[in-house]
Length: 378
Image (cartoon, rainbow, N blue to C red; front, side, top):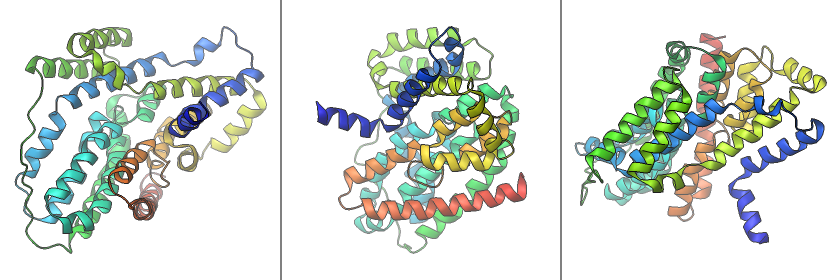
């Protein structure tokens, strides 16, 4: 039992922290009728829907089929690396950074093996690290790209165009940096490269299932931009998933939903304590970007967004801060842990090399984008 508890705490450290903070805050502010107002049910419902639909689309093999189609004409190492990195960058804008990495990192490990042992040895760690950075940076463009954007988009009450225009300069700068770094990393390997798949991925299941998932995703997008009430989208999504594949419900990240609830309770209670609320408002006010970046390095950017959002009204700056804050430490974005675990699990002895390259590269990207913010947006 002790081992199970220890394993759970290690695997769900952020969830445990959220529940502990919520429990402590409940001692300071005993439960009452105001508690229900803490919970952002819209964010929870849309997040649930998106996770379910993305799991369904992933099971069809659609994302892997697209990737294989793009790689069939690759002839150079720089083409291979660039495609693998940009797949994560652009796909994360719609399928979230988590799903992009869960889908394309295992695929990358296989593809680099097919391209030859020399390429695999040289480029595995740089490519996966760049994919991780790409997923975190690409996802910042849209409200559905990551959980913190989904929450802050609803909290800020901005339009979709306003949100995209806010993050577009940083997304373009990120794309240029990623493309340049990918070319630099692969420039040494000049020999021809060919990726030959023994068997191409076929889109599994009935075409009707794929059509249902696509329709549900469109409905969820309309819900994000407030064109459809979230209870309607939630009901349609649940019904659609029940009719297509009930097993998808077991793939939804319920711990993330509970993490949100825990932080909602903690933030709501702390906001009712004048001394704490006043102190945090003084720290955050006028420093939302830097506060978002700094907090993300310690508690990751989703909890940072939830925590800081209760003590500022400058949501655009906070959106920039927690998105850029996904760079830096390994826990700055919880999505980064997905890549790390996949590489360490598959590649013996890669943990140290991966961590060093990840930290160095992330800090370089973070420094470059903070400098861009100082010049462009401050």
